[in-house]
Length: 154
Image (cartoon, rainbow, N blue to C red; front, side, top):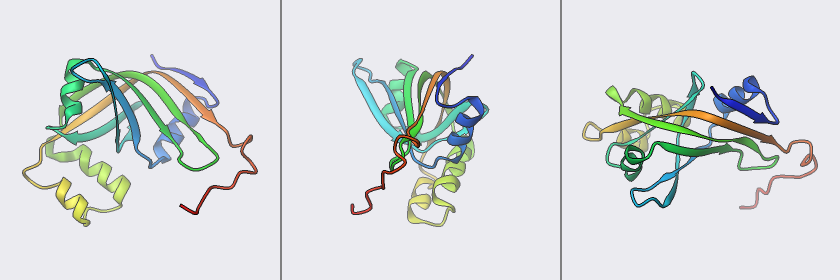
């Protein structure tokens, strides 16, 4: 059972995760026991976070050795808000690249770009990473940052 704490309830948290199109930051342990963090595209459905990556990515080996993860999905511009938590990850073959196709549609809008074509190439094997959250914490600094303008100079 997922424990939700912080600024938002379960429904508001789900809405944020469904709408957010920033990468998830995923932390795990490497095969040497050291901490490792990476960013992945994700989607939220059935109270789980779903990602895809190359079957040959280091994170696949790491998660096979230790399925415990921490994660964060947050805005990159003020007002800062987001979701962080921990849980477990499971891996499966991404049959017909269904998960990857869904993520490409979500983040790129279509499958026509050279990036999409490269990711969908026939020689690339994909793995579906499913994160089952155990504890979720949310924050929303909208009120305290009401008069802060995002920096658009960069």
